[in-house]
Structures are given as C-alpha cells and as structure tokens.
Length: 469
Image (cartoon, rainbow, N blue to C red; front, side, top):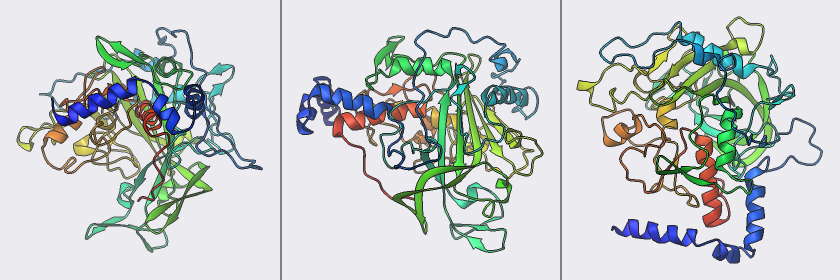
C-alpha cells in the first residue's frame, strides 16, 4: 500500500472512531457538537439578516417527504410522455434543434413556473409553497461557508465569476484581455459575479431527506453493493431548477434589459476583485438551468438551459427565457475526450443555434449556458459530482477537479477523457484515482453538503474568505 493510501486509511479510521477528540479541541461535548451540526446544516443563511431589515428573507424549505412519492404521473411529468430518442446512432447526423427537443424543455419549464410570480419580482422571490402544496425544497449545509454560502435575502450562493466574453456581445480579445464595448461606447474590463439558488421537487426532496439526517449528518448506504448516500439515486420524476443572476446590468449587456432584478447580499467589487465584505445590491436574472431524471437517457439525466433575452416578445418574465439547448450525455467519443482524428460531432447535446442572444455554448458543441464555463458542459461538470467519504473535506487529492484544470477542452488527455465521460450512478469516477468517492448522482448541491459536513467534522470551521476574480 502506498504512503498516501496508508495515511488516508489511518485518517478514515480515526474519523470513524468518533468525534470526541474534535469535541475536546473545540471545548464541547459530543452532544453539543451534534446540536451544533443540526444548526449549521439547517440554518437559513451564513449571516442572518441584520436587525431592522424589511426586505425579503430566505427560509430554508427542508420538510422533506418521508413517504416515497412513487411514480410521477405523466399528467404531471408531461415530458416523460413525449417521444424522444436519446440513443441516436453515432454514425448518423447529430441532432438539430426543433420538435421534440423544444417541446421537451418547454414542458419542464411549464412544470417549474407553475404557481410562481409571472414577473419574478424581488419582493415575492421564489415560492417554495404553491397553494397548499410544499412543492419545492432546498439542500442543507449550503449556509456553512461564509464566503459563497447562502445569503439571507433570497438564499443565493456565489458561483463562478463571469468574464466579459462569456456574454458574447461586442467582445474583442486583445493580448488575452477580454474587452466589452458598453452602450455608451466606452470600453470595460469588468468581471461579474454570479449568484444562484436551486430547488428540488418532492421526488428529489425525498432522496435528499433520506441522505442527510435531521441531525445534519450525511447517511451512508449502498446501492448495488457500492457505498453511496442512503437516499440516492434520485428517482424518476425528480426535477431540479436553478436560477442564476449576474451583477452585470443592461448598461453592460444590452439584452439584459427588463431582466428581473433581485436584491442579494453580494460581495463588494474593487477593480478586478471582489472583497470579502458584502452589501445589499441588485443582481439580474441571466440564466435558468433545469435537470430531470429520465430513465431513457444513457446517464438517467437530461439537463437544459434557458437564457434571458430582453428583446424577445412576451407578457411575462418566463416568456423571455429562451432555450439554449438540452444535454443527456458528455459525448465521450468527441474531442477532447478522444483525439481529433477519431472525433465525431457531439450527439448527446442539441443546441438552439437560432437563439436570439449571443451564446458561447460549451466545449466542442456540448451544452453550456451564458455564465457557465465554455470549456465545460452541463453534464460533464455535474457528472463529476462526487464527494470524499463522509467526514472528509474536499482537497485536490480527495475529489476530482470538476471546475477546471490545465488543458481543459484544449487537448486530448487523460484528464479530458475522464471529465467528458458518461457516469451513471453509482459508477465510480473514471480513473479510480480518488479513494472512497461517493457519487452524488450529478447533484453539485449534495456534493457541497457532504463536503461542508466533512470540513466541519475535520476542522470545525469553514475556510476563510478570499477575494477572487
């Protein structure tokens, strides 16, 4: 056994032995730590609203169903009743946008927007309860990290900072510096934060509640003899929705006009960096991501993305969300997963090339949204949703680099072949170099939850805030 493996095993045994040492180090008892764990896991925000705050205030929806919701009726999950083919012959042409793909994503959107505010106003925000139904739920442990964790207004988390060329409007590249010509003709080199939040329907919430206990501790189980979170995989009928907001304005990006502006406790910008200090400021809707479990897909998942188009006609905010495309696999036979000489066009993404706003899409015609990494793709990133064994924090040696690595999308390499592979739960991450990884079944929020618990278990506090671009 290697020295690394020996050290890993020794640490694992120490963690499994209990929390007494950590309790003594932090001056508390095991019982106190368990109480602290539940509080940290299920709190609403990393920093609560200040006294006198009169704006919207986020409340975590975590009354997860305890009874199996069963098969989603096709009268409710209408996209499951639509005839689609996710197994197109690789020797044939790549799929092109139109029916039934456009029908599929619109049916999912109809499900998501049911009962929500037509204008997506800040003062209303996202309604977890629709009528008398607890319709949408949140993942715990996402208010632990004070830097990127949930803020108190709408429960948003800080995601990837976008560079100017992500928006694709009047962009020039000069000596590696992205430039955007603003509406007033001036040149800008700003960076833009992305703030987002995600929700799961009751099928997804049933899996979440069985995977993380009321005490906040992740629950281990097995699936097909493979160690896994106890509640996974997510059942068919699961729907995930994520709204993404940008600090860019219509002055920066013209097609953001009329975009719903929400308040958020966001980082204060200074030049090309964002400080640890936060203040309430507006962010604007730029993107909506959707994901559904569909057993017909080779990965069991279908991901989709909408982009805001302020120039599009429509009576509601939802009408101005224009589909970017759908994806059901990472195209492991397309460059850079394979050499250019053997590469074929992507067959597991279908892109709306007629969309009314500039789009960079993803790596080699795979799907990615406006503020996503154009060197990646939706499923390639989410397919790397793995966490170290329960109780371990994530490090470069315990979890794959799903948010970027040297040569990403640029050269055929082992890293790219692993990244652009198709993983179906409970398969291990391709390559097997990360010991004991647990598949989160594409859920990056569940990955965060398990990893944040590991951070707390090992170190008792989150990593400190660091200003970043």
